[in-house]
Amino acid sequence: MKRVLGEDHHEIAPTVGFNIKTLQHNGYVLNLWDIGGQKSIRTYWRNYFEQTDGIIWVVDSVDRFRLDECRQQLRDLLQQEVRYYFNSQLLSL
Image 1: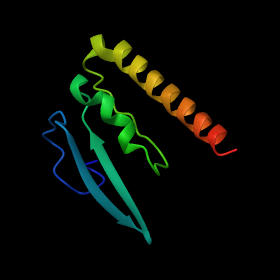
Image 2: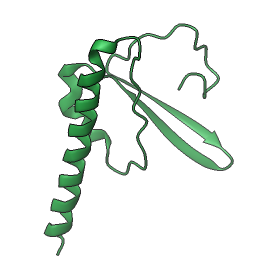
Image 3: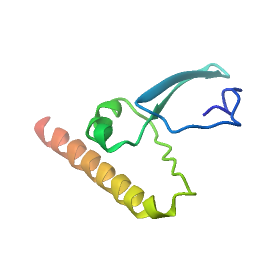
């Protein structure tokens, strides 16, 4: 995110909580949410998906011991969203 926004990207630290940045390009406005992965805030991730058009899931590839945990978290999150979407569609019938 820092590189895309032209910010110094040579020192990167884990995100604590979240950061919001806005990118404007060719008449488009893109709101970028950098949401931390601490276990204490994972239950709140769903709150950030309203009117979301895409997700970029970033994993610290140096921490190989957490890759399976990251894979499972993404799978669980996407399954929750699919269930939420279909339940909301059923309620609107």
